[in-house]
Length: 88
Image (cartoon, rainbow, N blue to C red):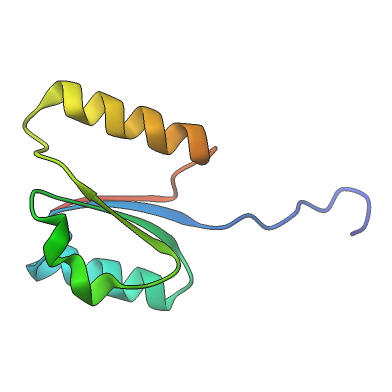
């Protein structure tokens, strides 16, 4: 790597409602593009279609603010950025 060049980092996406519909389709599209995807859903067990090395399914009710704080704290401990946030 030359002087002034930045190391390309993994692109990261966080998607709520990722077990079905638009959220699921967005997750599949971003995984196909090489993103690391955090798939949040009340029914994370339904994220079977997202069985992918770059996907982490997280069971959460996004109306629970304390649970959201905990999940985002855990994600922040692993990732230094988020490129895409989809609230589906």
